[in-house]
Length: 137
Image (cartoon, rainbow, N blue to C red; front, side, top):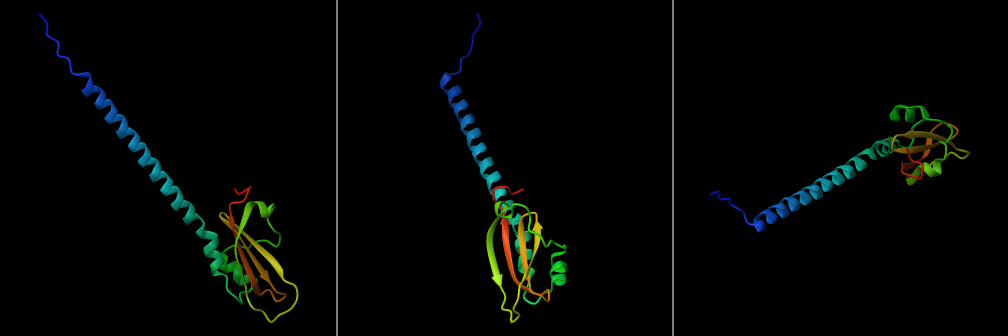
């Protein structure tokens, strides 16, 4: 005669439910960690152009600004500028010089810096635009 031990189905069902609950909780916690990491990376990535923008000060010449930013930049605005970059902030320096100003553009991975220079190539205004427009790369 053979005796077979049967475990109650309730215990087996409860065990499966606990495993499923643990799996769901683990997935939710993992997703939360990924989202927090993405937010931290997005915020830290935006500091490059903004930090460089902060380095520009009143009285800098175009050559000084290029040295501070470690790049030459361009006299022409980037293509589709208003669609690729969102206005963030601007600062105008007091200048006793009158006349036209000339814009100079520095495109960085995470933003755009626009410097306005007077006829003596001294900065009189700066603008920072963060990346994130319709066609941001």
